[in-house]
Length: 258
Ligand code: MF3
Ligand code: CO
Ligand code: CO
Image (cartoon, rainbow, N blue to C red; front, side, top):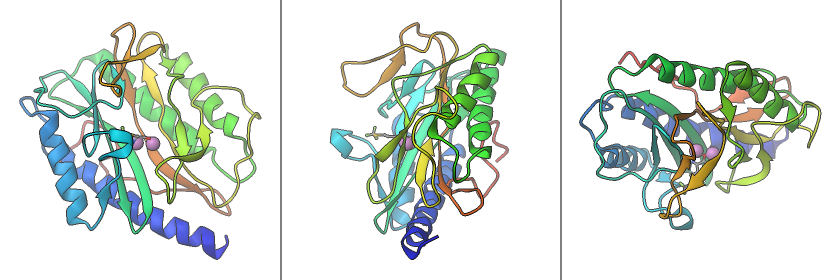
């Protein structure tokens, strides 16, 4: 790797570890009765206490420090005074900006006990992300990522959202290339050593179709069935990959034993 690549890796590693530690903090407070605004407050304060900025705050007019997307919300849910209740599933997506570099990650949370079908969807979504990460190395194609995710997810009876994708990240929150979570192996751009990007599959219980609410942000499933998402920021190394946003506490997927 070149010095420039190493600089980007070091910066993204630090931002990624703050983002991931933020989700570790959030996992401590998730229970029936809390509001998504309380999650947003923890996010804002924890990231600031770590000498970083919450990249979503005021990004293209987004009003809060993180995205909170419960149940049939696919992504970009805006924290508000809505109370979470037993049985809800929730995605929290945080992005830390530290020393000019971004670390972007999201996890699913269970609010109390959740249904078997919700657990199955959440597990399949996490598995899909991990399967697509395990194939990463210099020389594969971006289409290999989407193909790995789509094949697995559809074999489990779920669908892959088409309207949102992963993205390059670095000095900018969102950079090229787009990382689609569906598609054909051996198509698209080649993946090269030094590339840094997110993989963030949104997986639906029913159809993949989404619509965006009047607030201009909140994306929901058209059929009102459940949706789940996990996101990691990864980098391509000389002989494989590095995940910049793994939990140092082993809290990568629920149920979180805290
Ligand atoms: N964190 C989201 C992503 O994974 C982007 C959120 S943009 C915001 O790319 F403005 F909604 F925060
Ligand atoms: Co992202
Ligand atoms: Co994100």
